[in-house]
Length: 139
Image (cartoon, rainbow, N blue to C red; front, side, top):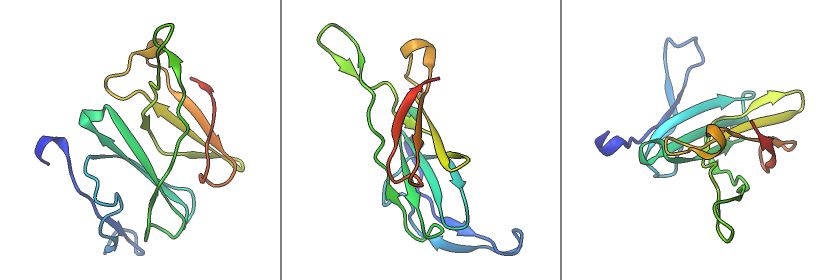
């Protein structure tokens, strides 16, 4: 855990936590950081998030095979005005999705260094099980 970074494996229990088996030795594909969340929508579809640089930014990964493999998820950037000529994306710290009916919703925060618009989050939604995401608005 030197400098706030860790490496993880993913384990699964089929007997209420009595025994565990490793199903993925490296769900974050060699990236180090601090796990920021894990959520499974069902037995196969799940998401994990990794925080970097003391919580200043992060990334989310998706599995559709119960955690055996994970792939990074691309979340469209939201550009806000910094000055008349400069913009930036304050939303760089994804949580993990929740399900609302047939839609997945995701809050993306500003990380530890965020101060845009009172520290609000960006709300995204997906109608294709988290393959693609659309910005809905600020919360």
